[in-house]
Length: 127
Image (cartoon, rainbow, N blue to C red):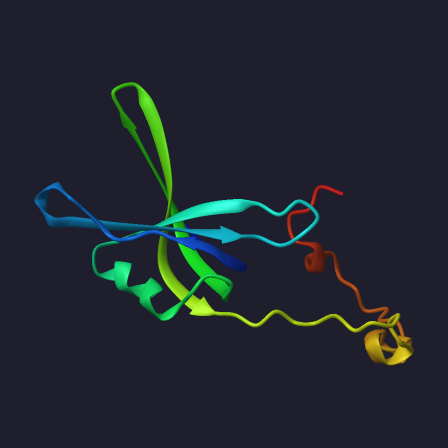
């Protein structure tokens, strides 16, 4: 299952080569919101180069999978990033929403209610 999140690039680590020529590169993204979080992601193999185009402070959108394993009785979870792209956050307007920001009632409601409702329209609902 794929996930995505956005935030500010907080820290980029160097690429590490593990045994059998396996490469790993970690980076930390600072999320936005009421309680900002520092979230560590992992890039592997040829995806380690994805961070070469970014520097700390850049706004990023990260696509990732959650990976987990057990090793010697310890459970390890990694956020495995597979795509990273630049992201520009939408700036909220400074004023309150106007009437034009919402659809009018006559746009969202039919003019006449439909009286030709059939029992088949409700499928297998028990009520």
